[in-house]
Image (cartoon, rainbow, N blue to C red; front, side, top):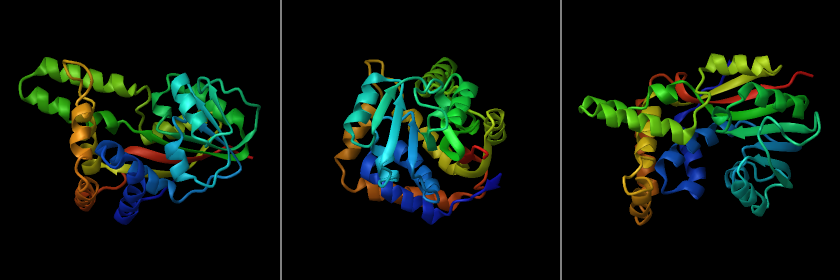
Length: 277
């Protein structure tokens, strides 16, 4: 498996692209910037399956020329948003391990930040293998084990002497993200191999400083409030009222990129995986 390392300018270019969608949600624009930079080196065409499609806005941003796309999402309300987007020819409400499509009917499968949330990973990957044509590819982004290891907010709260609160924050963070598969890079590759798929390329995303900053911001954003809702409900109106925020956050991102020393050890990964001919 070949490692492809991003450059700082790649990530900043990715940030400029995703700001169109997430200009005042810094954890999301931060993570998506790295994904977008990684996807820039790939092409999706032919018949495409978007697994865990959501509302389709991010897919359209990444692949505006893709025209023969089928979406799959488990949530009926989210699937309806996907249908309304105009991105997909159809959107199935179905689990990812039971896609109602024929064998070998897709040139590509795209799974953006979805596989780590799926309880039946081996069954899902077997289903992807079934749906792909021989020689077809899976392009996906996932989290690694460091998504948990580098989550520092619970550690800070514990250090301050609030062990019970730290445990609650950690459990609620994991529950919110439903991290069923926070695997190492090697274990992701082994999971693909068990399904008869070959991981050809690996793009590490969000190394130590970017990963730690993202995880701190994401933990704070989704921190549950005693009166209901989450901290992001307060943070978003504050940030969105300031038109200078996207450019200012770009400078923060640029500074974090300058701090990185190991671009291979990351809390996320993009994989290009192929079904053999």
